Image 1 (cartoon, helix red, strand yellow):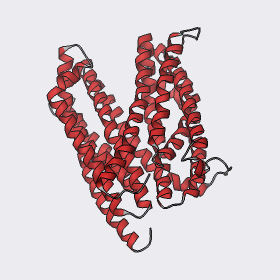
Image 2 (cartoon, helix red, strand yellow):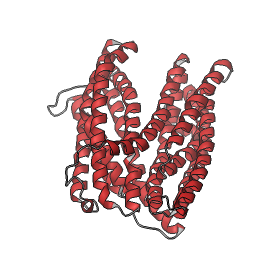
Image 3 (cartoon, rainbow, N blue to C red):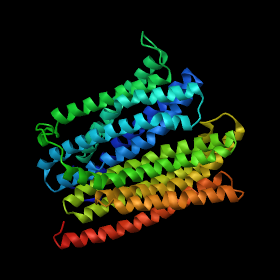
Image 4 (tube, rainbow, N blue to C red):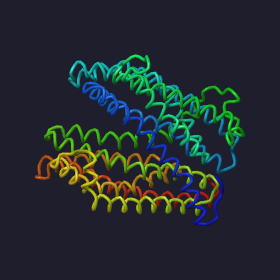
Length: 455
């Protein structure tokens, strides 16, 4: 990354960072999509088993990935403040932490998976496939979390195109292995949905090793001398990483888990309503990749500028990022408003289901506008290393306000299933307002500290 001197230069650098991250996020989500889709082509029980396994794994994966992503603002600050010589040590400690997190996940999963699946009262075939799918994917837990640390370092240096390249390698590898292992092609064993778990685990090892090669041999990483020297675990550095990473991880976890909670609560409605809700949520989740990618870009850019003590530049990046997200959200709102029927038609051929999906998509308009403000604002706050208040705000907005309001409206009014969406919209809107207020406070405090020589 380089220092920019005009809005035009900042916009160019922002887009240079953003585009590869957006492609990366879409590619990562596509891996889960192909696991589920290709398992469904093999059999209904395999589809259900993989869907159950994925629904249990994704909130944990995204939450713990968020904790390890705490390395991003740390590296950005070090680079911005010209302390490049400290990056290798911090990244090594991040790898140690990822190993500890991986082992804890494996231990907890080993002890709790059977009781959780038994509690869900699944059909024996579905339960067996879900258990074996998660058992297979567990062999990729260590490289997956290790890759999260490496990718966070790569992105923090502004080399988001490298992350994009590595992830784009992962997609054909995963799809190809799915084809071989799910369907038993070219002499490989026919494993059904379990083969998707094996394919994902192998894919995680591939991207981890490719990332290691890049960091060890390619510019500009060579100059940082990453992994040239052995460093023992440092509890004090773990504390620094966790202080930033834990709130980020929990914020992501609470945001992803609330949708699982809503889906669970909606199980009392008829199948058509549940299907329409899932389709609309799926499309809204796809749109969410835009503000999420902007959020990650702003963490890198704002962290770089605050590390350099250039608060005006950091503030300008925040305005550019949040403004871009807002403009794009209004553009997608127009698409949903005038072409919602076509979007709904992508998910079903039944007129009644299409009509229901279209109704849910109207609520998705307000949903994603709030997301366009709240999510990038979190990215700016992370760039300032201000994460605890944002985590508390997210918890209150989604779980204390959004979910209870949705439950009351869905249960005690004639809004029915739409009540949950109104509750989520309410929580997101309040969260966006509170996060923006927090950002104003943080910027003022940071400016005062810089003036006093405390930063």
